[in-house]
Every structure is written in C-alpha cells, then in structure tokens.
Length: 353
Image 1 (cartoon, rainbow, N blue to C red):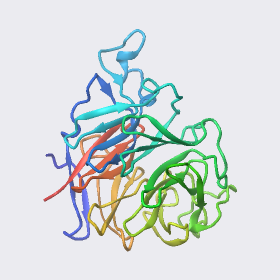
Image 2: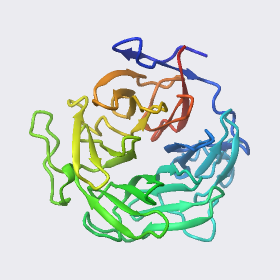
Image 3: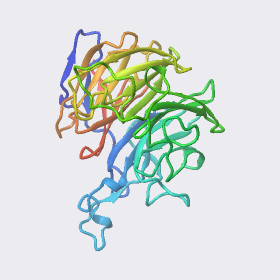
Image 4: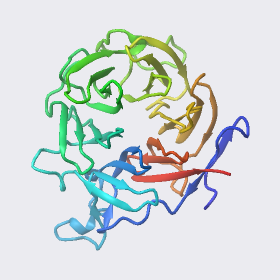
C-alpha cells in the first residue's frame, strides 16, 4: 500500500489511515463512474455507492456516443453494491438502467438499513424525493414527489433532500431536507406517515432570506442550504451536518437541541461539514467528517465534538481528494469516501497498524 495520505493527529491514540489503492476491483462491462455522491455500508460490510452517470463527459463515456468516440467507456448504473474485496455484486438504477418508473435527475445520498433496504435521496431541481428500495432495486416506498417541492414546514412534500438514516427500533426514517429546505424531517419508515420536523436549535424552520455566512458573526439560528447529512448515534442522539455554517448540531430524537460544535470557521465557499459517520466501536469514540472544501477528513471525538485529527489533502493521486463528498465506515474501521464533480471515484482507507 502506498503512503499518499497526510495525517494530522494530537496523539498516537487517534486513528490514522492509509490508502488501499487496489480497492475497488476494476469495474465490469466497460463501466465508468460519474460523480460518487453517496456511500453506505450494510450489515455484511458490503459497500454501496450512488453515483451520477449524467456527470460523465462525452469523452469519458466515449463508447456510447453516436458514433462511438472510443472503446471506453460505458456509464455504470447509479447504484452499485461491492463485496468487501471490492468486486461488484450487483448494480441497478439510473437513466439507462431504471425500471418503468421515472428516475430522478441528480443522485445524492444513500443509506442501507438493518433489513437491507436501500434508501436513496435526490436533489435535482425537480427531484424532491427519497426512495426506499429492496436490495435488488424494487421500489418499496417514495417520500416526497417528483416535480413538486414544498417549503420547510410542509408535512408531505420535500425540498431537494440530501441524506437519510433509519431508526429501526422506532420504524422511523430521518431526512436532511436539504438543498432548498432547512430542516430535519421524520417519517414512518414503513408507511411514510409524517411524524415531526425541526430546524436549527430545534426551532421551527424559517425560509426567509439569510445573510451571507460571516465567520466573525453571531451563529445564525437557521440551517443553511445545503443541510447536508443526518445520522443517529448509539447514544440515541441525532447528529446533523450544517455544511456552510461549518457546524455540527446534535438533537434528541424529539428534535430538542442538545449541543453544537464549529469547525474550520474561516472556511467560506461550500463549508467544512459535508457528511457524518461514527467509528465502529460500541462507544463510537470518533466521528469522521469529510470536508470537500478543505479536501480532508476531520476526526472528532463523538462525545465532546473536539477535533483530534485529520487526514488527506487536495490532489489527484491515490489517497488525495477532489471534492470529497460522502463517507462510510465498515465494522473493521475501514473508511470509504465518495468524490463528486471532477473527483468521480470511491476510495478505501484502512487503519494504520
């Protein structure tokens, strides 16, 4: 394995990682990935990604042009399952591989629940939907409506949702909603019935125009677009990625605000908190946060939300990042990252001995 990762940590107890340049294995069927927007790991340590075939340029997908421009390549389906060794197990969905139902315009987040169901979010201008699908891609439930969005207090319609996670004990699905709206919204994960929603600090969300982010200003009492990710910890708390506000906010499942933490507050543009995932130990000691602006993965302590390390830097070599967007962790502590825009790849980082 090559040493292409810049590691920063406050002590040797903090995990450090190195790139596995041989994961995943070469894709079959002359496939090529577009922007890899979402990454998830299931209970078998299979890795799932959702990617954007439409982001490929004609030269990247030369084999499907009319006439063909080159031997390589063919856009892969939007959803791909890999086994732990990096082999493709199955793939489905996307504009060229969908069933009879319409496929939304822009893929974004994903989550695989404890029953193996695959949840996917879509944030294109007219998408406004979350799909629950079987492992093989059969549509089981649709939340929201294609082509019709709602505001931050609508109890049926969504506003370009970004991410999703499931509480199996309560049969509830939490959605960060998202690129238009400024809230977390909760539905019944089996029936789709509305349960509750809230905005920053647990308050009723407000869609009024916001001033620009000011690193020297008073923290604003609203999520900013995009409200980018949501996860539930073993501590039964809900963790959210308020990306452009450079902060993590934590809530009880009821929506009551618990605490917040800020990170790299001078980060402008697209912010520093892009996704959230916990380390796999029972205490979930660490929280891993990809940052597509500063091009690294931050390592927080979960309990205190203090930054204790980071790895990565911007670049095109293995282990470097270009637009790192999403992150997932398997039971062995391996980290998987997805890159959007020009990155268009999934990478695996393994714990250093």
